[in-house]
Image 1 (tube, rainbow, N blue to C red):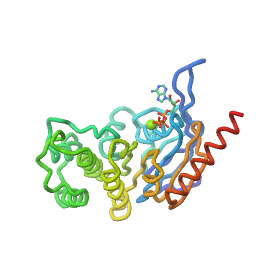
Image 2 (cartoon, rainbow, N blue to C red):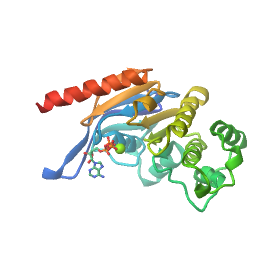
Image 3 (cartoon, helix red, strand yellow):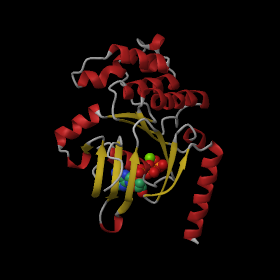
Length: 252
Ligand SMILES: Nc1ncnc2c1ncn2[C@@H]1O[C@H](COP(=O)(O)OP(=O)(O)OP(=O)(O)O)[C@@H](O)[C@H]1O
Ligand SMILES: [Mg+2]
């Protein structure tokens, strides 16, 4: 395998199916992709095309059938339970559509939870940088129910970044937000990559959200079928339409 050994995350000919026999579904059909350090990549594609599966396999949340998955210099599919737990805790950060904050903890406690679980000290200077970037300084003692959806998602962003993971994965992070709150979260993810060299991989259905990314990858039927660099929302929309067209041709 030639390629970028310094990539923050890498999939090499990854195959993944669910179920067996007649019920088997091929979710990933030979995906090879690299995510360079400090870049913001969006993953798009129709429902069921394998976007979440790819992210989960990259992050060690799901197993693969064949191929290899790397996070930084660590081969994820070579890890056993303890190594996997450690990788998920320290090398990957997650942002979900549903925020997934703990209701009994304050914003600050939610943000520092991954560090607390790992018995790590909070790097105060970094914590302050993250808090000021997401604009949560005056909300740190609030609990999730006392925060708006946009604020809750910014807490989730801060939580994903606080341990300085190799990669932040976000699965439709703006799916539950109004356009203004969504733009704040997207702006934050973009700055994380640009200013803090944070690698970010985001699944989205929204061409406008994808246009914040440096690169957009399109999946269809478990394969990468197209890639755009620094596209506008209109470029993304055009590509989505052309891929839809391809699908109709295949069906016909
Ligand atoms: N745990 C599972 N068990 C069985 N099949 C699954 C499982 N997870 C995903 N699949 C199947 O694998 C395929 C890819 O699913 P995946 O969730 O990766 O799609 P997606 O691109 O994220 O879709 P969406 O945009 O709807 O979130 C689908 O056909 C799905 O039904
Ligand atoms: Mg999904």
